[in-house]
Image 1 (tube, rainbow, N blue to C red):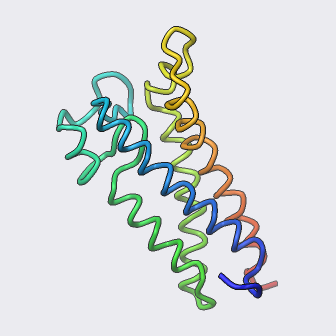
Image 2 (image 1 turned 90 degrees about the horizontal axis):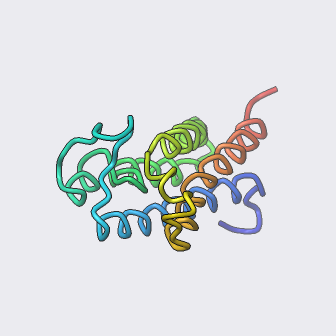
Length: 151
């Protein structure tokens, strides 16, 4: 990014990069604590080991899978393009923000992390980022999309 990069694009890219970084941290914490993904509630996971599920599948209880994060990184790079590929990147990041935010709220771990009996400051802070950053990314994506669209 340089000084000529529009502010909305900068904010979109920064929020996307921050989400990727916090997701990798969340994945490390979840793998270490053996917290598998359960996207539709208790018992809905794949049954695979948490590391394998992160690398090749659904992700962990606290983060999306690595394929999802790689796709998001590609969309983030595409967002810099001025062609229609750039618009694909921006719209893709809007959709990724929406889906990441919604799916993070469906994990049973959210209720556990925010319960007073099981409060863990590190997991609470990480999960707050996992929930809030996608919605921030979606808002900046919509602002960038509005800036780019032809009138």
